[in-house]
Structure formats: C-alpha cells, structure tokens
Length: 136
Image: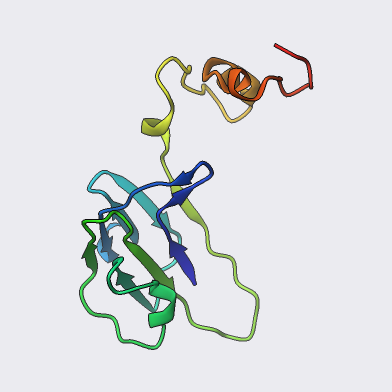
C-alpha cells in the first residue's frame, strides 16, 4: 500500500482534492496541480475525507469513485497492490519544482549540492547552522 496523506516534513499540508488517473501514468492529481506518479498500476485506490476518517481503515471496501473532495483540507488516499508473498518495490515520483521557495536556484543536475539550495532558502537562519555544523 502507498498512502497519500496531508502532511509534509513541516506539518500539515492541506489537501482538498485528490483524483486518481489510471490512464495518466498511473498518478494522483493533488489539489488540481501536483501529480504523484506510481510506476505500477494498483489493484485498487480508495479515498477518504476528514468526515469519513482515515482511508487505511477502509482497506476492505471496494473501489468506487477515483476522487475525493474535503473542505477541511484533510483528504487522504491509498493505492493497494496485490500481496504475492515476495518483496516488491514501488516507485513514487513527483515534480516538486513548484514547491521550491522563490530565491532558490533551480537544480542544474542531480549532482548539485543541497547546501546551496538550503542556504538560499534561509533554512540556516531558522536553525542557526549550516550542514558542516558551522554557525552562519
């Protein structure tokens, strides 16, 4: 199972709308703008809103609509894959370039260091030190 939840490393990240698109990859479309791609087609995809509770508690229900809206911003979804008795890897990919704060340079390659992006995003101002432990 791969779960889509309204959280990021800093806390709650509101999700009002989720739509699953089997013919586009497969992928979730989150808040009508961010696509989260899976490298395999799930057996079923379930959704839930704040009023319905956690989607994981609905694991035994059949797949219905491939979308949900939650006015509170706590929509969730889960993609379920067959259990075969063998280990399995599922890749989850997304483009977070729209989420990079303004002022941060776009990465030119995967080899580009994170330090320049974190420095530009003022993370060190919040935590008081750089990646080498030096005080900035």
